Image 1 (cartoon, rainbow, N blue to C red):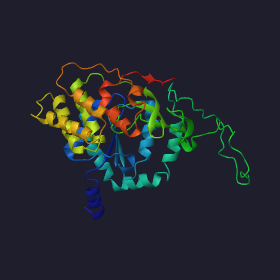
Image 2: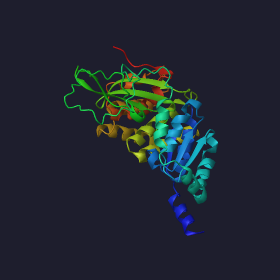
Image 3: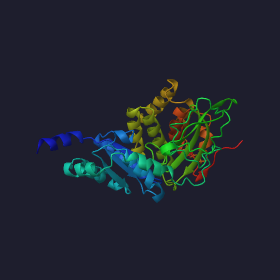
Length: 352
C-alpha cells in the first residue's frame, strides 16, 4: 500500500456524514444513526463539513433540487448514498467509505466538478414550486434591475423617500433581502423571510417552514409538509427520538447518544437499562435550569417520556409553536415537539 492510500485510509477512517430525512424516512434515519454510533462516526452539522451526504428514505422528485443543492456544498473527496431499507444502512456506509478512498475516481470527479456548483443550484432551488405556501404581504414584483448601469447616474440630490420599490427584485442570486414592515409594537423594522427545510439535518422529513423575521423574532410562519409522515412508530420511540434530536441540537452529544440507545432498545423491544431514562430526564431538566434550552422544550420532553400509557394526538400547529419566539429557539422547539406536530400538508401564515 502506497503512502497516498495510507493517508486516505487515515483521513476517511471516520467520515463525517450529513444525514437528512426524506418524507417518511424516519426508520431509515434511525437505522443510519445506529450504525454511525456503532462505528464511532460523528455526524456533520453542515454540508461544508461533511464527507458523505446520506438521504434517508425515498426522495420525492419535487425535492431532488433541494438534495442536489446540499450535495453541491460538500467539499471533495465526497460520496453520496440513499438508504431506502433500514437493513441496508450498514452496507451503504461501508460502500461510501470505499468510494472516499478511491483516489482515481475522486480525482476525476474533482476535475469534472464546476468551480461554483452552489450558485446555479441555489438560483434553481429558488424557482422551486412551494405550492400554496403564503409568504405574507411582501411584494417581490417582476422588475429586474440586474442589467441596469447606474455607473454614470448622480444620486446625490435624488430623494428616495417616495420611491416605490415594491416591484424590485429583492432576491439577488436567490437570496432574499430584508424589507421594512411594522413589528408587533407598531415600529418599522427590517423584515426577512427565512426558510427552513424541507431537507435539513436533525429535522422532520419534508417539513418546510417560511419564517417572517422581525429582527431575530419570528413574526409569522407558514408551513408545508412534503409527502407524508411515518405513522406506525410506537409513541415512546418517537418521544425518545425527540429527546435525542433535541439534545444533539443543544450540543449535548453524550446525552443524545444515550437517548438513541434507549430508542434502539425500544425498537428492538428489549429492556431499557435501569435508571438510564431517569438520568436522561434529569439531564433535560438541568439543561432548562441552565437556560441551554427553553423551559417549554424541557417540559414537553419530560411529558413525552413520562410513564403515561396515553399517547397524545399530534394536533399542534407549527405556526402557533414558533410565532413570537426567537429564531435561535425554533429548531429546538420543532425537534422537541415533533411527535405532537399536526400532519397537515399546508399551514398558511396567520392573518390579522
